[in-house]
Structures are given as structure tokens and as C-alpha cells.
Image 1 (cartoon, rainbow, N blue to C red):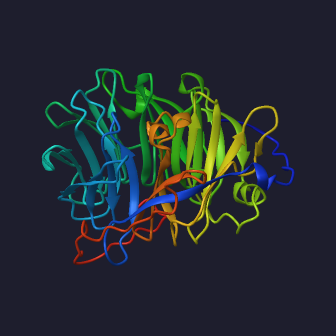
Image 2: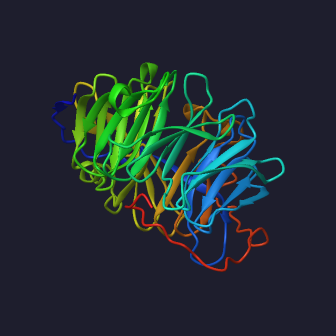
Length: 387
């Protein structure tokens, strides 16, 4: 059910460097000593807390406005592949999934584990999502399987085994359409399922999109969240209408196009995409191995282009950046009240808070070593692999 009608990608004019918005470093927090990585940064719904997953198999909690350390959640025995706030009625519940085969839920007020779901001792859980028609489903992407549990009793209710043939890197309940689930995999496929009622491969698989290469990350955007952006492990970008399984544009040379959009080193990798509903703008966020980030606008309409960098984050990181948490008003965050653009985390173990260059607080950077503990061992996670 795949349509392959990609637009031609147009070349961009030379960037006007005077129009680029540059951001300066406010705070820098060293999350651990040694080689530990920051994997992911996510906010609580009310933005009172941000959770940060580390290569030490722990999750640390901070204030996104002040950078204050709140504590950590410890219990996983292998790499943490994803964290998210559950979206359930209890907004303080944080979830994490791991290559140890478990999904764990934490009370962020007490930092205690309140639930643990096991996919099996031989499994690895690469992704998970909480939702469904009644809001009680947990879906997890594992080794070529998608497993479902009922959140209320932690009982497994379904297992889809025939749709993917390799690790499932992404599962998402569709915003505003919680009866639909989208999955993505190393096998290059994006599948859409109807998860209302009894769930099985035969009757509930609605569409299959063949991206053609291993998929790293996908996300919804646009009116009614009908568009889907897709980043791959070989750093390509494509835009899809997930409901019709229709390809709208392929950027197979996305890194080259982004690299032409600034005068700095070539883009080595993409971190994420971010969409502003207010501005109706999608950006792909690219970085260098030296830790510099750029926000590049993506035009997926009449002329398919990756534009010149509209924002540059430079001077905070010394290595690959893994996660970006925007907080400015245009991204729906509270950071504009404090002049905060957002936070980033990377393979240098740093959390960096960013302000615009004209803020008087720029360059008052600090590193808090009193909030850290030395880990007994460090686990590194290859950015180009889902585990």
C-alpha cells in the first residue's frame, strides 16, 4: 500500500549569515564523570521537571528552568532506549524501556519504581508508547515484535509477530487518533495498525510504507497530525502522509543540503525534527562531531528544499549531540519567560541550556560536579544502532 511520488529537491541559494539566529550557552551541567552519554531529554507536561536518560542505565531529573537536580531513578540493568512521561491521569509517572527486556514506571515525586513489565529475558525493548482507544494500552517495539499490555493489570493482551522482520525502533499511538498505532523498524518498514478491539496481524494491519533503509526515528506533524517525518540510520529524511501511505518528498542527500545552509563544518548526523504548529514550520536538526547544532527549515510543499540554518547552537558541546529539548514559545514551551531556547545533551555527558546571544546571562556557564556520582562501568550506545 505504498505510493512513491516524491518531489524533486531544489538547490538552495547561498545562506545569508546575517539572518541566522545564534544562541549562547547559559548553563552546562556535567551529568557524570567519565565517558557517560546523555541519550534523551523529555519534559513533564507542566514543564516542572525534565527527565534525562544516561548511558549509566539511570534516569536523572532536573528543573528545566533553573537546572536544579531533583534526583534519579535506578533499576535497569542494560541500556535505556526510551523514556516518556506516561500521559496517564497521573502526570508524575515516568516510563522507561531498556535492552534488559523491561518497561519500568517511576513515581517522580518519590523516585521509586511503581511498576515493571517484562517482555521476556531474551527480549530487548527499543521503544514504547502509552495510549489506545481507552488510554490503557502499552505498546512496545522489540525484536521484530510489537507487544501489547493492559496498563491496569500489566497483562499481555497481544503480540504482533508477522509485520516486521527486524528490531522495531519506534512505536507511536497517533495523536488525536489513539485507535491507530504506527511502528517503524530496522527492516525499513513503517506499519499502521488499527488497535481497537482484538489486535492481530491479519485483521488490524492497515498499511505498509517501505522506506528502503533502517529507520531511526519518526514523528507526526501538520494539520491533524496527518504528516509523518522519518529519519534513517544513514541520515536521510523523508516526509509521508501516513494515512494514505503516500510519500511526499525524499531527501536522500539531506546532509549535503543542510551542510550548504551554513558556513561551518559539514553536517555529520541528524538529531531530530521539530515542528511548530504556530509557525507551521518543520525543522530538521543537524549536528557536527564537534557538537555544533543547526536548525534547518524543511519545505515539503511545492518546492522540496532544506533551507539555510535559522538557528545555531555552538560552544556548549564537545562531541555528538543526542537529544534536543526546545522550550521557546514557538515550540510550545515556557522558556520564553526566562529567555531560554532549550536544552541539549550529548556524548560528552553534558546538559547545556541555551539563550539567545543578546541575553545578559549568556556565558555565565557552570559545571555542577556535586550532583554527580562516579559510575562503576560505562555502557556506550552506537548512535547508528537502535541498541
